[in-house]
Amino acid sequence: MDKLYRRTQILDLLRAEPVATQTDLRRKLGRRGIRVTQATVSRDIEELGVVKTREGYRLPLRDVRQAANLVILKTHPGNAHTVAVALDAVPWPEVMGTVAGDDTIFVATHSVREAARVRKKFMDLLAI
Image (cartoon, rainbow, N blue to C red):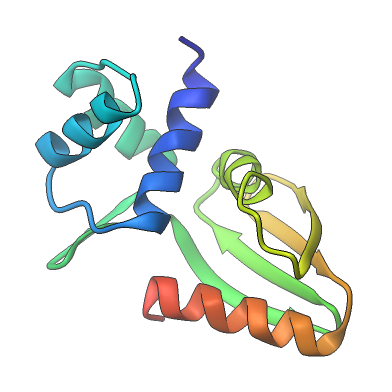
């Protein structure tokens, strides 16, 4: 199995539902047909920059801003590409596409109004 695919699935799970522990994450990955060891999950979490909070694990986004019809996401260094791949897999009709650097993602929308909606979705997901 491809590491990028597995990590994309981890980010997708973190967006979709609460994940309290690494064991919980391994179980949820298993339901998607991805069998991994605890060491692999731990390494993925660390390299993705996933944050552990009282409520469980959170996406590795540090900041969410809007500039006209763009939403700019800041991640931990080295995580933007993986997060952008996961975002591209999400069926949000407002999102036209993403461009990722090392720690920054530009999310393009059709309009300023849609960018505001997408920014709010991210803010709600992240409780920033």
